[in-house]
Amino acid sequence: MAVDDSRSSTLETRTVVSGARPTGALHLGHLNGALKNWVELQKEFHCFFFVADWHALTTEYADVRDLRASTDEMLLDWLAVGIDPERSTLFRQSDIAAHAELFVMFSMTIPVPWLERVPTYKEQQEQLQGRDLSTYGFLGYPLLQAADILVYKGDRVPVGEDQLPHIELTREVARRFNRLYREVFPEPRGLVVNAARVPGTDGRKMSKSYGNAVNLRDDPQAVYDKLSRMMTDPRRVRRTDPGDPADCPAFRLHEIYCTEEEKAEVSVGCRSAGIGCLDCKKVMIRHVLAELEPIQARRRELAARPQTVREVLASGADTARAKAGATLAEAKTAMGL
Ligand code: TRP
Ligand code: SF4
Image 1 (cartoon, protein in one colour):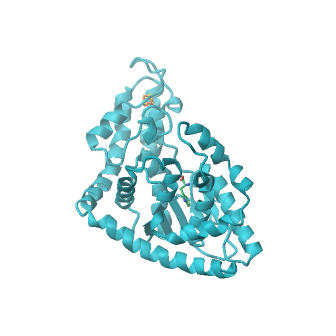
Image 2: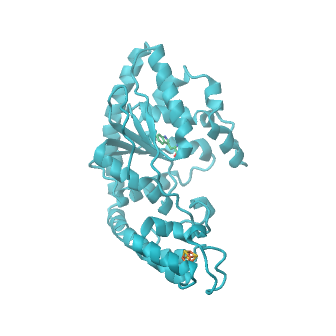
Image 3: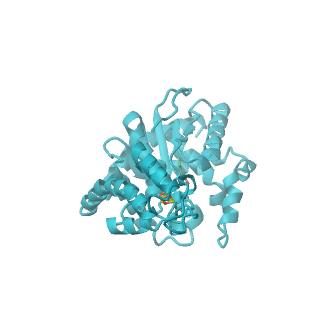
C-alpha cells in the first residue's frame, strides 16, 4: 500500500503511533481498512500500536464488563494478522501512566473551545443518544489522543479520515507547547491510506454494531454463509435480470480480492445475466477464505498459549514506558516541573 512520505518533519523522527479502541473480535473492515497497512508500516518505521482502553471509557464508562476481554481479543487478532511484537511495540494505553501525565500537563494549556469545536465531539454526542456524554473525559478525548501520540514523539499517525481533526488538534497542541516552553514535540501528520472501504453484508459500512460483519475468526462455513447472502445489485431480482457491478455491494469485495481477469469475467457475466450471483460471489469468497486461513491458523496457535497475550503486553509496556518516560521528563523540565 502506498504511503505518502514525501515531506519530512521538523525533528526528523521516524515514529509511527496508532491506537484503536478495544472492540473485541475484528472483521474484514478492520483488516482492509487499517491492519494490512499497519503490517506494511512496521517494515519501514518503528511503530507503537496500542489498545486505547482509556479512550474506550470515554463512551463506555457505564458498562465495563467486556473491556478486558475485548482488549485481549483485539490483541490476538493483531498478532494473528501479522502485527509483529518483535518489530512493533504493542501495548495497552492504561499500562503507561505517562500518557495520563502528559494529558494533565497539556490540559493546563489548551482552551476548552479548542476541544468543543472538534467536529467529532458534537457528532458523537448526537449519535450515541441514551448515555451522558457531557463528561470531562469525553470532551478531553482528542487531548488524550494528542498525548498518546506526542509522548512517543510520533510523527506519522495512520488513521481513518474521520480522525484527521484529532491529528490537527494534536499539531496545535504540539505547536502551543513548543512555543510556550521549548521545542519538544514534532508536529505529526495523519497517514490516510486510501484503504478499501469494506461494505458489510447489508451494503452499509461493515460494523460490529450493524451486525453485518464478517469476522476474522468466523469459521469458513460462516464466512461462506454470510457472503453468499450478501446484498447484490437490487436489479438482479431473477437470475435472468442483468445487473451492474458498479451498483453491487458484493462486488466491492471482488474489487479488493479478485484478479483483473476474474473481475472482468464476472462483470461481463453480470451485465449479460450470463452468471448467477452465487456463482459470481463464489469467485470472491474463495479468495477471502484463502486469506483468512493462515490468520485463523495463527490465531488458534496463539489462543492455545494464553500467556502469549500477557507476555506481549508486558514486554510492549516496558519498551513504551521507557520511551514515554524520556519524553515526559523532557516535557516536565520544559514546563518547570
Ligand atoms: N481515536 C482513535 C479512533 O477512534 C483511537 C486512538 C486513540 C488513536 N489514541 C490514538 C489513534 C492515537 C491514533 C493515535 O480510531
Ligand atoms: Fe453483484 Fe456478481 Fe450478482 Fe453482479 S453477478 S449483482 S456483480 S454478485
